[in-house]
Length: 295
Ligand SMILES: NC(=O)c1ccc[n+]([C@@H]2O[C@H](COP(=O)([O-])OP(=O)(O)OC[C@H]3O[C@@H](n4cnc5c(N)ncnc54)[C@H](OP(=O)(O)O)[C@@H]3O)[C@@H](O)[C@H]2O)c1
View 1 (cartoon, protein in one colour):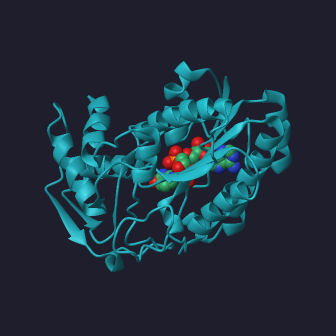
View 2: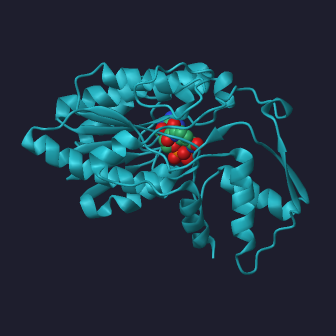
């Protein structure tokens, strides 16, 4: 089985390239080798590679910048997935794609299920919803995995920001009224490996059904709670150089950003867990495992 991974230097892409190795030949491409803003280039590259599975981990993920660059975000997150889907259909490949909690408006008071109606409140969310719909409009074998609050031991993310600020500052203020599930990129990649294996088995016995699932760590917290857990766990590391004494909870209104964020980002994962017979670990267990890689 030949598996193409786009966005191989991103948080999820990097982990995918490692976790998918036992499944077959992994062809990893970065933006230079496959630029998702070049739709003809995507078609040409796919025709050269002819993968059995396409895992699209590339995306325009700069949520605030997307407010001013919606055309580019729509091209990469909205149109390119449709081209990947059309090409995948032509070559009989399975398409795995990632989407986001930001396709919801965050007004629900319990975790969102796959049946809830999307209503994005920022440009990034609108572009990602466009991508989901572009794939669903093509009669291709696909699995879309919506995830949230992704972090990893490498790359630019909330974990890295908190760790570096905690080495420089005495005090930090973090938003405490947006809730969600921080999700380690490794968990996404390992779960994706299960999705691919099961999907390919089902495709070969005729029982496969394209679907969209929520995939996050279990439990929920706020950005403030996540920052507290990062610092608490990092303090237990030998030789840590954290200066931080206090993390103060602040409301979203005190930390204005160009893009609005949903207040509730929690996604219910029961459907995926049932389908794959998996159990998602809690976000704090996954954080502990990720931080252990710093030692
Ligand atoms: N990060 C989150 O909190 C979060 C939350 C929910 C869902 N997701 C979704 O999860 C998936 C993986 O996200 P991630 O966190 O791994 O993102 P990431 O770390 O920002 O990685 C995205 C990758 O996409 C690449 N990319 C950007 N524009 C491209 C283009 N025009 N052509 C080709 N590659 C391009 C980037 O390349 P460069 O390195 O060259 O920029 C980067 O390697 C995405 O679909 C994202 O929307 C992420």
